[in-house]
Length: 112
Length: 338
Image (cartoon, rainbow over all chains, first blue to last red; front, top):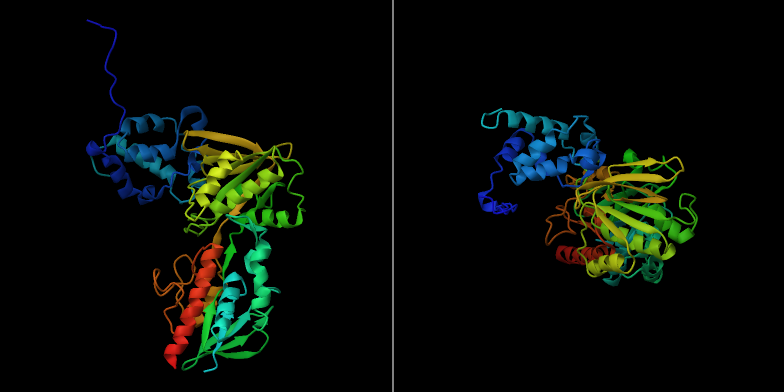
């Protein structure tokens, strides 16, 4: 029976139950991912960000907070042009970070 | 022992060290490569957080240093350690025998043209923090428009930037940008001013108040995002692109003037000098202190001392305090040697 209301799940990030295994795996392959200072240069220069919300800055943060679903959605908008890599002041190879995350999604449990 | 102390550099650090050494009864000699004393401070219009004219900060030194030997337009050719003293050969051919050497060699501002994406030296209305201070002093710079309606500041130009080879925070640019933004707003009350920052590091006394004033009383906009690229519009203005990382959306704005906050970087030319006396240099290119807590003004070699920004980015009051500390270190060192 439909009473016309439902429960909205909490959107809070429960740090106690955090699973950021994907980020840790990423960092083993691309240690530079840890040096991001969230300056937003990647997003500002991204051709897709204005239309789709693509953002390497957010991607790295979401992975650290275990928000893997959001990351998967975002990745589908990347065109792999590499402009973000050119502007990163930390010298993070953001294009390779994106490709590595894609490979990790294809094979989440397995080792690369 | 002749109590002669060589001070390398005649900026505020060198001047203050000389003043204190003189007061302690020693015999300082300042060697300065440019044609006047005062260093970077002399090129600045006024200083944060009280808008003190830099002229006023430097004035007392005229009197204080009148009995100090000052060698302008002179550089150090070589330094050699003798048994106890140092033998210093100057570019004018003179040799000095000194009991101790104080390095007050300061810093350089990052060359903004190296960040080509910001268009310094390419676009007509892009200047640096140093250019803006010169404009405050002279009011003449054709890159500054007569009635700008929008002005932007880019923080951290060449600082915290691995690709530019400077990973350190330049420390004073956050507060300098706020000071300069307020000064420009006073000059152009109808303009909108935007500061693009990565983090605002407002650690010093009154800095936080200054930041609140900038927002509340002067309506300066702070946007958390590093400018990724700058281009020129068809009407000769500059357009900047950044991400407003707090909103999570890319932002674009057209400006009449863009000010790049060039950061404090090490003075590379001093490194050869440091190597000649086996004085260690840190990863960031600044001189390495004996330790970073209680012996910042001492090198790990007897008779060599530091004052000011040659060991890392510092504010003017910190530099002056260090210069005093270095002078006292020298005094105690010589006393212990007797």
